[in-house]
Length: 325
Image 1 (cartoon, rainbow, N blue to C red):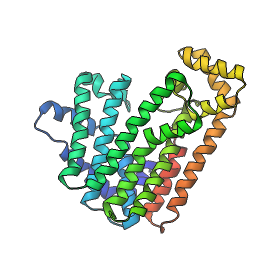
Image 2 (cartoon, rainbow, N blue to C red):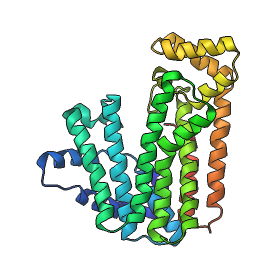
Image 3 (cartoon, one colour):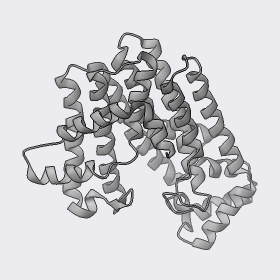
Image 4 (cartoon, rainbow, N blue to C red):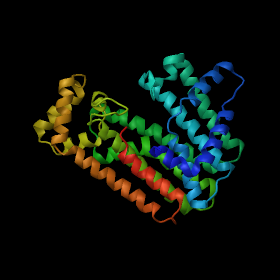
């Protein structure tokens, strides 16, 4: 049994029922839209986000309800919408090894499908009066957009401090996982504000660790989802690079900024940047920060009684930083 199946084991029935409900909710009267949504549903990833929703709900309450299923569906719809729009923005032709929507159906259709999924997610909450869940997810969407724009703004000048970097990854990546976890708690314990906030924080910590792990992949060769040095080519300021910049002499700093800004297409120069960041201890520094976030998340879990759901979340937190891709 692989690690993802192991994590899914305690909520196997809930996940199967969720997939059925999610598939049915995607049916429309428009044949083209049905063809596209069928394509999306059949090329799903590991479905970590709905898994967070169900595991948290079961850990804090032992039960799930219809609100839990709707919450998981809203997360999945809105997450998929953001991915579809991301592929258009990035002009990306592949997603998880399959052709992206914009590669198969062109940008206009991809943008409209993204809008459709977003509206569908919002209406699912509104039609059922889940305004508390809608608020959680809407905050996440707003923050994800802000994070992306903040990153674009800073990438132009390459003047990202460590604090700004944490704010970018908190908004861009961690906020959606935070939403999954707070949503899992809110679906079953809507009146327990303290618990909902605790689970939001738990998800945020995992999201931070997850993104730093992604940053580290840029400096390692192996069976990962993206080629080595891709962040440097895209002028993305990641934690290992920020640390190297902060600990460099003025002359080194100038060379580093010039390399990322003007020579990011030069393979030899990118290799030199990677070697320089490693030599400066950027990888060790980023790894230590990632482990800090991971440990903080595990400490929150330890506050809950032992259960198979808590155990699965422990495995999930460790998987986030031990994964190979």
